[in-house]
Length: 194
Image (spheres, one colour):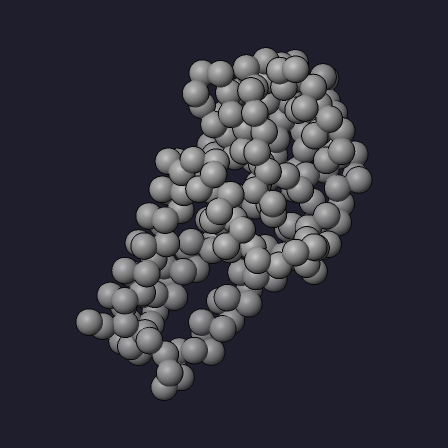
């Protein structure tokens, strides 16, 4: 098996785990997974940086509140993607590389395209709120609206996401490090059934 095939198999496995965990895992299974993945207690340096900008006021225009990701999350994303591409480029001529030299540029191109898509998602991320509707971005760079009057549960993954569950069975995953986070969380919790 070539290094290119190994890279492709690992990428497919990672996507399959992500899809299964985000779509079909019960809250108990997700909590166990989160505990296994996030073994460190307390706040890490990434947690501190992610919170930079949470106290900034969201943009309000004609009754529509728009919350963007914090400066910290955007900075972490830029640094992480840049470091990943830099390390992959250094790894190109390394004898320890699992990617054969003849397939390096194909792997690098796929990785750079995925990194570009991720950066587009992070840099354009906005949660809009108008009346009882919340409009959130999707991973496909689209937008989806949810009526907050149907909100029944909020689940915190412990690091970057909040999972919102609605009466109609739909679920939304939103980034929790957004501008004006305190007021945003209080607003969401106000829709929960008592």
